[in-house]
Length: 233
Image (tube, rainbow, N blue to C red; front, side, top):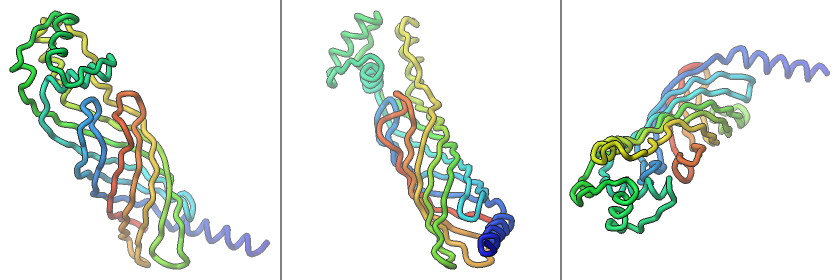
C-alpha cells in the first residue's frame, strides 16, 4: 500500500513539475488536391502547444499549413467537376464536353477558352487536437510516443474561381456549386521526443496519417512527416 501511495505521489509531482510546452515544426505534406485530384505534396510548417495531463500522457493542440501551385485549364476543371458532381465521365473527349455544356447550359465556349491555362493554388490549414501517450525507456531522455485525435481541415482550391468565368460567359445561366472548404478530420501519429536532462528545449520527429472526411475532401489519406522543437520542461 505504501509503495502505491509513493508511486501516486511521484506521478503527481511529475505532472506538477512538467508545465506546458510550445514550439514549431517543419515537414513534408503528401496528399491530393480535391476537385482536380492533382498531387499537392509540398513543404508544410506549423506550431503546437503541449499540455501534460499525466506523467505519460500529453494533450497537443497544433496548426499546420501547406500550399501548392500548378497550372490547369478550364477543360480539365469542368471534366473533373462534372465527373465528381454529376457522375459524367467524358474520357478526355473535348467534343463531348462542348456538346454537354451547349445542350445543358446553353453555352458554346470556344476551343481557346477551354484550353487556356490558368494558375491554380491549393491551400490546407489543419487544426487539430492530439492525445499522445509517451513510452518511456527507463531513465533515457529519448521517448517514443503514439497517439491520435481529430480536428478540421480548411481546404481551399482556387480553381473554383473559374466558376465566375463560366457564369460570366454563359450569361449567369450555370449553377456550379463551389468546393466545400471545411472538413472534419481524424489522424494518428507516431514519433519520438528527445529532451536532455534539465534542458528546457526538446526536439521531436513524427509521422502523421490524417484523413479529411466528406465526399469532396479528396481521395486517400494525407501523409506528413515533421520535425520540430518545443520549449518548456
